[in-house]
Length: 324
Image (cartoon, rainbow, N blue to C red; front, side, top):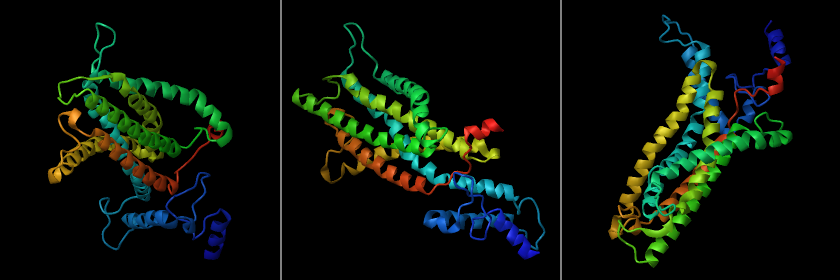
């Protein structure tokens, strides 16, 4: 009987060298344990530890010390997304800059639009939303149908690929922000402007590219991130998947404050003036933005490694959905 059962398992494609935790490739086939490599092997070992939660012992059993197999499998699926969640924290710290330092830069610049109106610096944040909406429209109407012809993917590209594009744009944004700030400081120095209340003779719209690119980056990263966590969460834990998205944003904002205070304190040591001061005309925000560009690049590399070994739970084609 055992030999017949083993033979039957082999006929349907389930063998001992397959992981038994529901991990599948994009075609829905089980992933070979030999193909898991170190990253997936680590996940497999974690899955084996979680499996113990559903193992019955000789002791009296209650619902508090033995979990159903379904709950264990759902927990595995949520744990599998934690590395992706960690890779989205740094981008959230960049999003915080659009509401803090980017706005503070605008206060020091010429804000006049016409002879009788001065644009409030905080209004620049609206360009993030404007370019976000425009980018989503262009992405869905033109990019997805064009790329779908080559990739055969209903979404055009995978969600992780879309997130990677957003992360790459973040590196570009901070690099541009560093160049713009260097230009602002050079103009300030040329005109002898060093006091905080003085206005640098440079238009506030010089900051527009970094706000616009942030909106474009969000159309790739934030939209894909929300869809990814919701889509890959188990059926009974969709709300927790959405919470992953908000958690990344919240932790990112807290981390932004920590990085800002840490950099400000460290750069003041040994008698140095420091990069971040109350007076931006005497600060070196260009160095700070360059530091963020490097940090974003390292985070992008981490994300690429994590994404390379991530296996989607399910990937249903639109044709299959329509057929059902």
